[in-house]
Amino acid sequence: MMLCFCPLMGMAQTQHYVSKGDTISYNYTPLAHSDASAEGAPLVDNQSVKPARSKFVQRFLDFATKGTVDRTFEKKFDFSIVPAPSYSTKTSLSLNVVATGAYRVDRRDSITSPSNVSLYGSVSIIGYYYTGILGNTFFRHNRHRLDYDIGFQSMPTNFWGFGYRAATTNPLSEYVNKNAFAEVKYHYQLVKDLYIGAMLDFDYTKAKKIENPDYFGTQRHSYVAFGQGAIVEYDSRNVITNPTKGLYLGANFLVRPKALGDVGYTIWRARATINFYQPLWRDAVLAFDLHGEFNSRHTPWTLYARLGSNYRMRGYYEGRFSDLNMVTFQAELRQRVWRRLGVVVWGGVGNVFHSFDTFAWQQTLPNYGVGVRWELIKGINARIDYGFGGVVKGRLINGLVLSINEAF
Image (cartoon, rainbow, N blue to C red; front, side, top):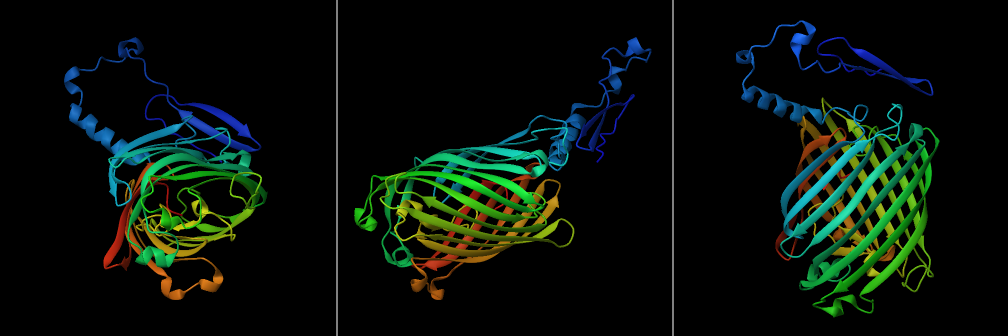
């Protein structure tokens, strides 16, 4: 494979790096000597220098286009920071800062995908705050991959109880949710597009300043749980963070032993996901997501499946509809409009239920919405989504989501 960075002026120099038969050729132009007269060239008349406005326009155009170019070969770390205010029904008015970067473990290897990492920070006027780190690290020729999601948050939370009926009939209550979590996954490529792996999971959740303790029933207000599990995946996506083609089939099974934590039982969780991405016309992609989460009988409320998140059933208040099991489906049309800018529309459905015996089709909830995308660096988008749901107690459910990377 050959990568060329064309010179704009002067003589180009070339360096060759070889990694397992994969040759990368870098062409670059040395900076010209600051004293033009030293090379025998005429001095530049100051009157011929372009005005500052032209430089400003050029910088703006560079800024508008550089996000669409993979710069991880020329930079050790391609980095971008986006501070932005936001508003949602869950966090009210917030100030968010997202710092995201792309890099390569070995810049001489063009076969391996670029790795990525994102740092989050958020604080709101209602006392909510969150900090976390999320990323994917790819190792030699994509044979090994490490995914991680670690964070802590404190949030004043609206609460209706557990299950569909409680969410649609109970009066609104509140408590403060303290949550620390960590999930680390390791993937190993058996053959092309087929992976197996292992995962570790930690969750600590505590409810404080509870307005209506009766909503918790016989469950405690705090739990600690550790888990370990296995992963099987088929993944032909071209990019994990912003796929435009390919198929993903994933399943993982997590066990949280009684001895590791204070739940009082050995519990388990199973998740399965199917994603498909179909290119349409120019810069347009139709994406599908089918997801299921299923928990064992004695799973505490802190580990319930929650409908409404940054990824699925966007616009619903996360945790209003929560129970042991959940199934969701969504389809999304993505269109790049200009340079870094893109837009999306989506529609979907979801259902939470306590057991398969109690599953009811009439409790299936709708979801639809629109969003805007801004490519921070190659393959990594900042996104703003506004989602809508069903009508509960005469009010249309809706909400704003500000996040990083595509929803799926």
